Length: 247
Image (cartoon, rainbow, N blue to C red):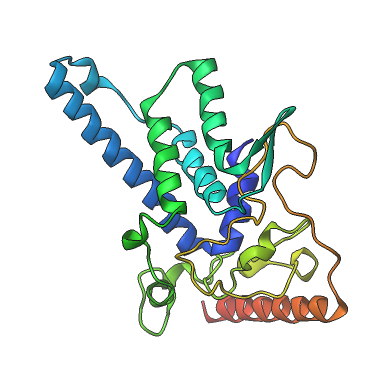
């Protein structure tokens, strides 16, 4: 249930820039709410313990990402929690209940789930960044503030994000400028609207399930798709070599 593999797939799906936007949007929104509620509780109760409370840990934002995924899943999607089968829309709350049972209730976790649901149901659309702005950030000709990262190995531009294909089995997605042809999996394309992240179609992820817990399975790629992948990977390798020579 670690964040590493899940985060890699999500970054391949959205691109590095928009992945950072999503991560920081959920983190900032959750912690601002946490701070406001704790100050309000301190004002109402005059209990200084509320001023000493902390919101920390990767699970605060990870629960938000899971909730956002599950909110966008089809209504009848089922997720596994060990031996239990749970509807995707309720999965984050069941997971939150499990954490509360094992370690006690935590306000930051509750707010992370709430913010994730809000993001998934479009309540935070005003804070979402449009794809045009992300492209400007990465544009070297316009001196975008992220343009210096574009040619770095591992950085996935908005133009090489794989969208939903990142969640397919064996997908290497858009592994950035050092990707090899054998690791890619699907014609590389930018999501039409990163404001609506390309989460896995199954919604959320499973805890304790079989090997198919997180990723949706897909048929093997056609020769045309594999040829497109090889061409795209070769182009990225040429761009990387040209960048190294120019340096």
